[in-house]
Image 1 (cartoon, helix red, strand yellow):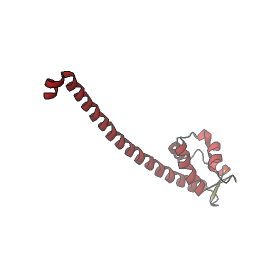
Image 2 (spheres, rainbow, N blue to C red):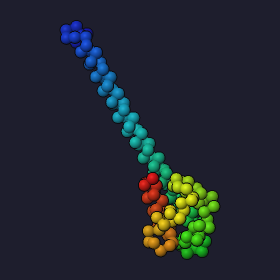
Image 3 (tube, one colour):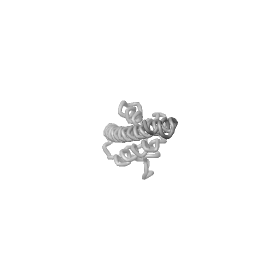
Length: 128
C-alpha cells in the first residue's frame, strides 16, 4: 500500500487501528439504541401490568362497594393472591403495606380511591 511504502509502516497500522476503533464505536452506538428501545418497551409493559393488577386489587379489596379502600379493608386482603401479585409487580415487600398505603393516599383521608391506587403504583415504580 502506498501509505506504508511512502510514509511509514507505523502510520498504516495507526490508520487500521483508527478504523477499527471507529467501527467499534459505531457498533456500540447501534447496540445502545437497541437496548434503550427494549428497555422502554419493557418499562411500558411493566406499567400496563401494574395498572391491571391495581385495578384487580381494587375490585377485590373494596368490600363495601363504596368506591374507596380503607386501611382495614386493605389490611384484611394482604394475604390474597391479588395483593401478593400487586406487591410483587411493584417490587415491594408486603411487610411495607402500611407505608405503601400512606404514600399512595395523597388525599390523606385514610382511604384509597381507584385513581390514587392506579396513579400511585407507577409513581412508586418510577422511584424504585
